Image 1 (tube, rainbow, N blue to C red):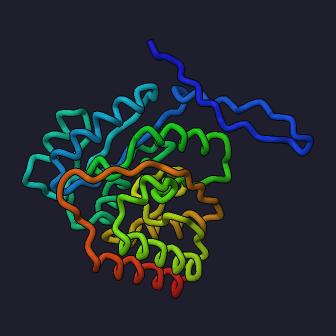
Image 2 (image 1 turned 90 degrees about the horizontal axis):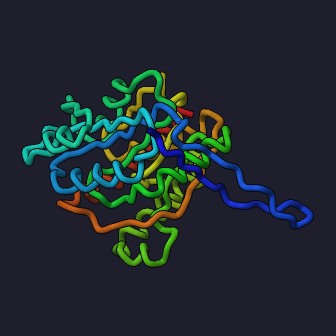
Length: 257
């Protein structure tokens, strides 16, 4: 028996100031939710990530966890498999390559793609709100989490990390016309129809910048919501050189436009 869960969207005000009735979204009626989780040496993180996904996405029917394991040696793939995920052995290297491979294995019945990191930094509790926003507004092509939306969360970041992200956000807006507060967030929900015939070129952490550009170039809007952010479990993968790779991706997209 499926328990019906109802999302209440934020109340809006009319010109006269009267509150309109909130829109209701029945999440158990949303089929084809595929959660893509690129993973490399994330045994501890993948365990808690999938357990939390199970708890938060319990009302959804037809959901699939698609883990792309970058040939981990710590048992990441085996743990994900035991927790019910479909596990693909990555053929290439990098987060962008993992996302591309995952897209090639997504069922045609899919409606939404969730992209989340395997290190337990992004709370799955926000996914229901993200899907609800997309169900209520067909002009939204992607909903992305803004890690800098709360002062408590910003305190977790080193000053250099924060300044680097703000700089790349400015460059992204100027070069690609993508205006986002946190364009490199690792938590997002995307309409699968916009990805069905798309093969990303990004191999690494520049996949988020390419995704942003692809959604806006397709004529859809991107909505950001503030999210909490946690200290990662396991070794940090992002390096300074990845920032230059992301910048190169933004420049490449400008020249290709």
